[in-house]
Length: 147
Image (cartoon, rainbow, N blue to C red; front, side):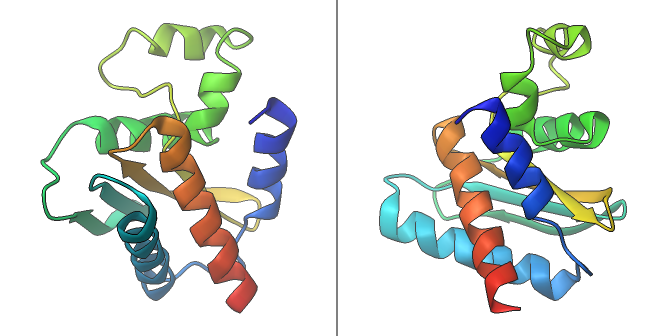
């Protein structure tokens, strides 16, 4: 994953209208993929317009601060948490976040973008950070393609 690819994902994976049902469908696709492909469970958190619309921990997954940290990273940066990881050396603010317990400078948080504006976030935590990111991106792609 490189900087150009992550920017292309953020430009491409935008919603005309994000609904709670769309969020649920994305979460269900993530869970299905994890059950088929991953050796361990994940947690999923979706926030839209300041409202928590989904917080799900698969069986065997314990609560951890990572979902909240990824959420804050996306909402404060306006980009995916993987973006902050890839651009950390170029953006001093992201570099400072690396040592903070409030942020997660790693993959697994992706912005909900409507009409060019970040209106929420989809977070996954529990696998290697690039896998967390991939699960979200693939699930959003599938939902957008089926709309």
